[in-house]
Image 1 (tube, rainbow, N blue to C red):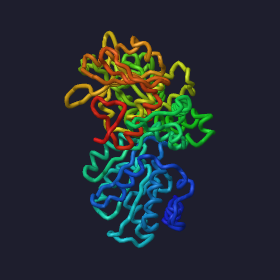
Image 2 (cartoon, one colour):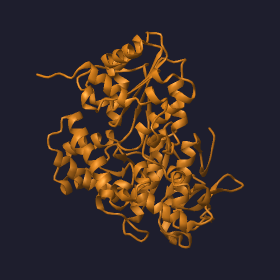
Image 3 (tube, rainbow, N blue to C red):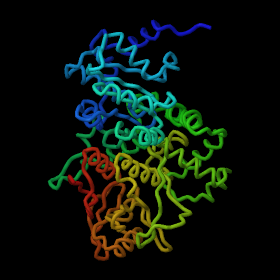
Image 4 (cartoon, rainbow, N blue to C red):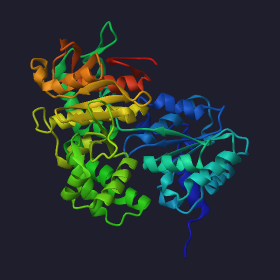
Amino acid sequence: MLQISQKEIQDRLHFDNPWWETSSIEKRYKDFPRRFYFKSFHELIIEKSINRAVVLMGPRRVGKTVMVYHSINDLLKEGILASNILYVSLETPIYTGLSLEKIVNLFKSEFNHDRDSELFIVFDEIQYLAGWEVHLKSLVDSYPTYKYIATGSAAAALKLKSKESGAGRFTDFLLPPLTFAEYLSFIKKANDLIIIDHSSNYKTPDINKLNKEFINYLNYGGYPEAVFSTLIQEDSSRYIKSDIIDKVLLRDLPSLYGINDVQELNKLFTTIAYNTGNEISLEALSKSSGVSKNTIKKYIEYLEAAFLIKIVNRIDITSKKFKRATSFKVYLSNPSMRAALFGPITSDHEFMGAQTETAIFSQWFHSKSIDNLHYARWKHGEVDIVFLDEVMMKPDWCVEVKWSDLACSDSRRIKGLIAFSKKNNLTNTLVTTKTISQERIIDDITVKFQPSSVYAYTIGANILGKKYFKTGDIGHLTER
């Protein structure tokens, strides 16, 4: 039987690392806009005081490989020799069956590197190597002067194995889909559509133009490649569904968790996606999808592990959690997935409200505080988003999400928000609107009204700017 020769592997390594000959990354990567995450990611790569590998994780097609190339480009600019940088995609068939150590040894012999050289080694899509976490930890321990960067699409599965086997040796870095702030930056319209007032609050000089881009963001703006491709925008279902959703549901999750009935998983996800932003129950999911409740629980864990969805738990009007929660809200990690599955939406679409809520919630996927978010519902009312202080078990703030201006003139439409605020002594609350910005006092509660598109921008811009919400201050974010 024919075997892949060492020369063929070395030729492939040269093909995958063009900077060995050109001292530069390819132009298509160099010209691509940088994620807002890039600076903090690159700082981890050049960090020398701690001997740790960087594990870059996130869903498919969010720009992990491009961000790695951008980092390689900066390493070259910073004076690192091109021959000291290795990039290997473990998804490439020619590397199948090769251990990480074997690949490193081939790299070392190619340039006569010794064990004390300053090397930067990237293993892209590392989840394709069984037991990767054990092999990577061994390399980190064996070659402390080498910097290892691993990427993978199965975010939570990678994180679990990273914590189990790489304790003290791996630093996890999560890259989610684009925020609305990043989307506007990518299309170079942030400066025209967003301004900062004297109180450092974000506003827009043209709410209609901003809302137009917000709807574009809902339909295709979560994925960098789609932002720049008219072809993808015109047929997002083919790109996002086949290349992002289907590969996760039909390949990644079955291989990671041994799922046999992929059609069952696909049917469940479709049901969940259609109901993004809505409250659902295991009972209703089971009836709608035809999947047993115990199986649904496992599948939901897998879908969260793949960073496709986020489950949000319910509290009552007194902010107490339910010991036996039978209902919960589910959100897609990015609203573009729903548009890909069921078609794009317009400003007056019947699902615009649910998509707006999904978009606003999805901005929080970029924050460690996402697990503090809940929704409140009781017999006579509900509130869409409540930030719960897990230490004090008290809410800091709450938000009612609307794609309408009616609540600005009719307070009955937000009576649940007012009741919750009074019950929990919250003096400042927020209601999102379609176009109106104003502030009113309703039943002694100061209610700020802000367009949903502006609020979505505010969350993403400030979280990525390493700013955090103060207690009782929803719109204006300040440094912790």
